[in-house]
Each structure stands twice: as structure tokens, then as C-alpha cells.
Image (cartoon, rainbow, N blue to C red):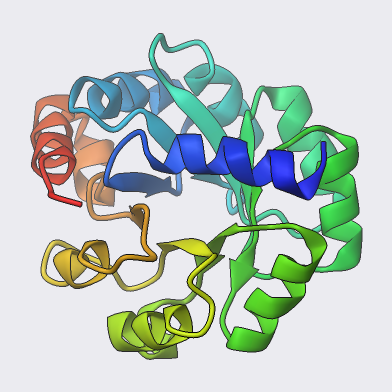
Length: 213
């Protein structure tokens, strides 16, 4: 998969909904129910972070849920890419980038939202052919004003900002012309997941899905 093709696919995923849930799931037995609640609420693109021992099993379970588009977040190494793809991930997300990671995603036909934090990061990826990227950690890197400033000289690139975003500030990002969607964990808070409150999570997803872009 070329970087150009990867960005086309990544853009399609980002345009599915205003918010991509960023999910840290400890118990794979809850994965399918969680995915069904989020999809029912209007958030079909799901980023499962590889931060727990059960993450790959979570991806396998969520990949069975009709209407869901499941990806793997926190991709750091080529081994992560191969394991995520084998588990059923259809896209990847990384906090930053290395040439080795990019090579692995392209070789495994896994569309990637590569992580960026500076204009130099963006320029390097754009030179390789990527036009859709992650901006992370968004709030710590200056928030929406910083992303707007990056967009002025590099309008060809679109972003999914993630990190410190909630319902309180999500509209600041979604109002930017270079933002396709936002990543956020607030739509699946740990207390609701632990309680199995799928109706509560579906309600949060519906609120996020209704945001204007």
C-alpha cells in the first residue's frame, strides 16, 4: 500500500463520524458489547490502543461486530503492525513515526494515521506521500490554535487530533478546516465500561456523533 493510498483510506475512516473513540480495554469479554454500544450510537470507527495485555483479543472480538471499523492504536514497532493486522485491525494509529513503522504498515497494507506534533513532522510525512495524520498530544502541543497555525502553510494535510480532547473543547478542533475528526476516550469512560452500562455509553456516542464538522 502506498502512502497516498493509505491516506485515502484513512480519510474515509476519519469521515465516518466526528469522533473516533480511543479505547483502553482490560477485559476482552466486554469488547463486543462495548463496540456494539459505540456503533449503535453512531461511532463506527474504533481505535483499540495496544496498551493492555488483552488488546489484541479485544480487536479480535470487536472485529466481529457488524458495522464497526476496528483499528489498532499505539503502534510502535513492525511487530505491533503485524500482530494488529493478524488480529483483524483494518487501520492503525501511532503516537509518532519511524521509517520502520511506515515501511511495515505499507508492506502489510494497513492504512495508518501517523502521529505528528510539529510542522517538521508533518512536512516529512507529506514528502513521503501522507496527507492524513494524527496530531498528538493535541492539548499539550498547543491545542486547536497550534493546529490551525500548522494548517496555514500546509493546507494540503488533514488531521485527527487526539490527546486531552473532551466535549468541552472538541468543537474548537472540529471547527478547523484541516480537521476531519477527533480522537477521544470520553465516550467510553472506564467506570461505565466496568459497570457494563452500554446504554450510557451509547448515549455518549450519540452526543458525539451529533457534533457538527
